Length: 211
Image (cartoon, rainbow, N blue to C red; front, side):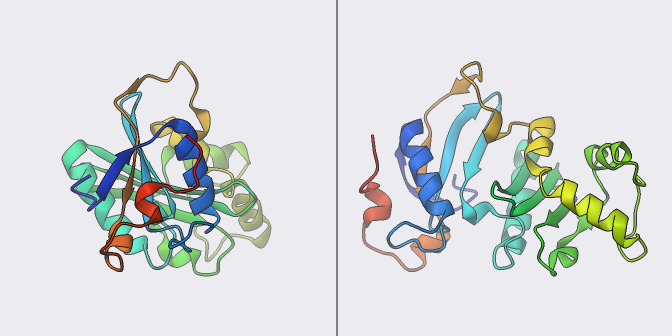
């Protein structure tokens, strides 16, 4: 957590974590209107540690550069690091994949006109395979692709982040009782919280959460 600048961690149950993730994802927490003030850090799950919260969003305009840099640092230290966004209510997907300190891919499809400016790297094998399944070219140029093909790919990519996460590591949407867990999950404050907060608050205590 030191590499990520996370502080004031406290253990939480999966029930608490689910409540916090839901609250922060909808901007409902007191003192944390944009959800970036804290994250959930999971126990090790099948060899991966998940860090969940809006602070990790690779397509957030205000956070994208920091998330890119952080994934580079983490992958240089641990071999691999990834960041995802998935809007389960049809809000789109984004993925960032880094390995050994090198960015392999960043791609966002959320319906925002600025998405194209965030695209970096070459398409992942799973992206190419998915396009081939749709009958689309595995390699493409958004500037020359037909409107019909572009719309078909965007529609498919909106739902793709969980599939990529599961294929390359662990998806939080596919955890089961058989998932091997080692350690204890915690809630921790991010630099977004510590920049404006010097005294303990409800974000530290998890006030109002079920245990």
